[in-house]
Image (cartoon, rainbow, N blue to C red; front, top):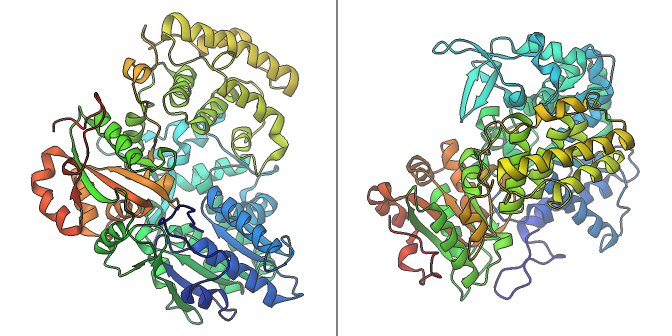
Length: 609
């Protein structure tokens, strides 16, 4: 639930729902389709609807599930429901209620206990990290069709980019790379080979879960009895495989309620366009509802969002006295860092928190470039650890650094348990890996005794120090955790190849007067968040798509970026395109940031486009 303690920042009562929210919370027990605008208090509404259903069921032994698409959302739901349970409602927090991600629900209830019979494996299925050496085997390679360059295998580390999407009247396997989908010509065969090992990705988990329900209908009947009511948050993210599973549960008797915003459907490659949510109300027995009051954004930002989406949502907040609103700012290829610095200076002068703000990009590659983590030097495992050091030291992104270090270190072992990287990076789901996780985490965060500082010259200092410390770590992991390695191979696995004599961090990163304290990320990674200020760096095509509305995925991605902002929104526009786009930008409600910004500190201007 969005709530802000500061005066004039907007607030919603933690006890009193609005009329719209109350109607949804206390509606009769039937499937619902709730179209909710951004910042409308979905968490507040969903957890109370969950509690209402559970109370109405009384002594019924069935469970009520509230499912979403991210661990952050799930943690928020659990925290809010726990507070509700011990607060005004006085209900047992554990009383036959389940809050999880949709994928977690599928894995726990279908994949792990039952899918092995359909997959043909003799072990409990495990999640792939992409570093497993057996993925190089010919039976486990997915082959991409490419008439122009010839067929080629999906790179081992890109196994998670194998997706299943719409194809004609059915589905097919595709390789998602650089924003493009290319058909895979042996998808079912390679998936079956991996299945016999028990290996799966998140996408293959959905694939096997759907096949399991189709081939083992008794499991479907049991699940429908166990979960008579299921609420799904962020339902615009339901892809084609999710939809098949949900429809099977619905047909078997589960009452499915969806809540979300079709304008935020940004996973088109998986068939998640928001269309399933948009049309769900037309199914027999489904009651439509809406949340149309925005508790997050100042009126100027909401007016822009309404103009983009053709909605008429109402603001709950009033305009603050400090700088706020929606602005465009020109940039050139050489001035992007100046734009980022000016954005930080501006939001800080407005009293906004850099730690609750973000610079957003459409593509991961661009975000990495702005963050200084794209093009890390080295090859193989050395490159992965160099990238970890850079994201840790340049932008304090310890989460990404830990994931990179875990993948690299486990890749150096000879006998790592299947799925161990996935278990290390999901602490809430796998608490039994706490000791190993602590060891890897200690190495990741400690630049003195663990992963060396990115400020060291790469060839002369950083790599020799890295090799020495990794040897110590690997010895400890072998002694304490039974993870053996071949010591004689570490030197070649952590070589100096493609490293330079310079530090991993460039001089501007080492000596900036005001180091950048704002997270740099993709729009997809912040979906569902509320941010004080947002800078959306866009190409000409992205800006045009945003102005055209939500009919395309790029337009919806822009809409998601806009609606994250509470107080301040900047849109980065290529200087070469500004003359063409200016009139349309101003017509939507954007103002020129260069006309509003006070002179920033020396060395931090936005530059001359």
